[in-house]
Length: 347
Ligand code: NAD
Image (cartoon, rainbow, N blue to C red; front, side, top):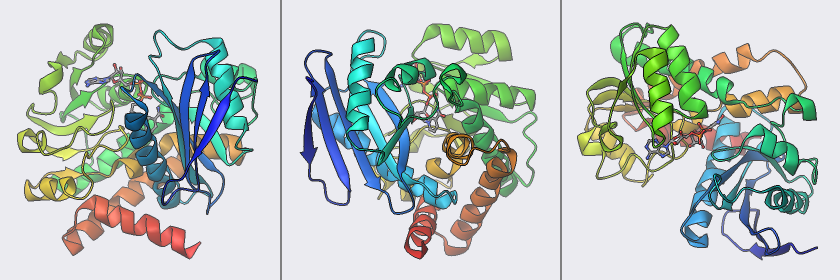
């Protein structure tokens, strides 16, 4: 076996491993943040990180968010995540995915994999040839497939709760929503919003995806650098993290920010307060985008079919977070973090 596994000691994390396999070009990191509530479940992200430090920073933030996501959603799951350093368009080979499967298997079920950006259910099928600790494989391989539609459904009901809070009505008809990234989550969300009569503005790195959105929803295309600044009722970040920061927040013109991207704040200490000062309501991403995790938990861990009541819970949780935030005059993220921590401590 060519796979080399190195353990890193990172404060606050149960396990962090770096896996390298020169024969398949795998360079990946798995971070298990917490298994207090159950085994850690989280997606594998494949992205052309510039170096291992950048990848490590991303995986640690993503894994921490998974712990909070599972806890606040009432799931008996822990938090973990994996990243592969590489371009999914060029570097994703069968042998690299096999090495990734071996790396996951080395953790003996403490980390259960799923998809994230750059990884598809059919890639997980290949990973599952080397380990049983994978969810979200295709139906052919016995899995429940891509959970992105469930993620989008959860975002929709959470957005409705936020609209009720800000505009006094859940109705999305005629609301202007700017979507950054129309990939798996953004595309499903756009479909649902379009069915509700929302007016959509979109941006994506991939021109074919914005063209498809324009054709299907009569969406307006916005330049990449402008999507967060357009006048809109809701800005929905559905690409990668860090979009809300000291440079972008002053230019936001939406009343609500609610989207699927993980870790939307670059600086989780300062940025939530910057949003509050601008009187823009931010729905914490890990509360809003829990539908995918819920899908995998219900279908593949509990082996149940009925997802709807679980997804509708997101609306209730968003309402609780926003109400407490208003009462305590604290940013919604600070309130959600306290609620998640309380659930972890009480378990
Ligand atoms: P994806 O890779 O399918 O889609 C992301 C899209 O964003 C792509 O079309 C990409 O071209 C575009 N993009 C990247 N950078 C951009 C930029 N700067 N400006 C505009 N567009 C940009 O990924 P996905 O599965 O849709 O996930 C999107 C986000 O949601 C990620 O942060 C992911 O972690 C999070 N998330 C996904 C799920 C899920 O079920 N898929 C669940 C929870 C959270």
